[in-house]
Image (tube, rainbow, N blue to C red):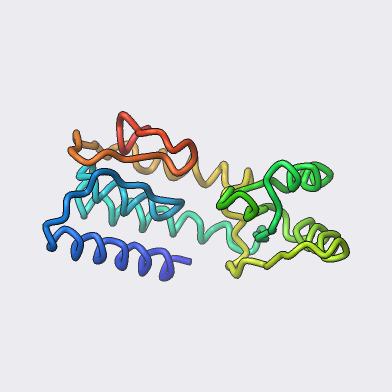
Length: 178
C-alpha cells in the first residue's frame, strides 16, 4: 500500500506540474481519497515537502490495517444499496461514485456474504483489489485519528485556487484543515 499510494501521488503531482507548465488557469481542484493530498498541494495550501510527509504517513498508517477488511463495487443507486447493507452492521457505503455506482467497505466476511446475495439477484458487483484495507469505513477511524495527530504540526497557507470537497462538492474555506 505504501508503494502504491506514494506512486499515485507522484503521478498526480507530475500531471499537475505539466498542466501548470501549459499556463492553463485552474479554476478549482478536487481530490478523492488519497488524491486529496495532491489536490491540496496543487492549491498551494501545503508545499511539496509537507504533501510528501502527509502521503508517507498516511500510507504507513494504512499499511497497519492491511488484512482487516475489503471493498466491493456495486452497480446500484445508494438508497437501494443502503437497504441491503443495513443488514450487515460491519459494512457501510464507503464511496458514492456515480448515480448507480457505489463502493461498500468493511469486514471481509460480510463483503463476501453481500457479494453472494447481490449475485443471486443478478446485480453487477466487482471486488476491489486491495491489500485488505476497508477504505472509507469505520474500520479506519483509529487510523484517521492517528494520522491527524501525527500531522498536527503542519501549517497550511491561504490559496488562490479553490479546493472543493469530493464529499459535498462545496468549496472548502481552509483547503487543508477543513
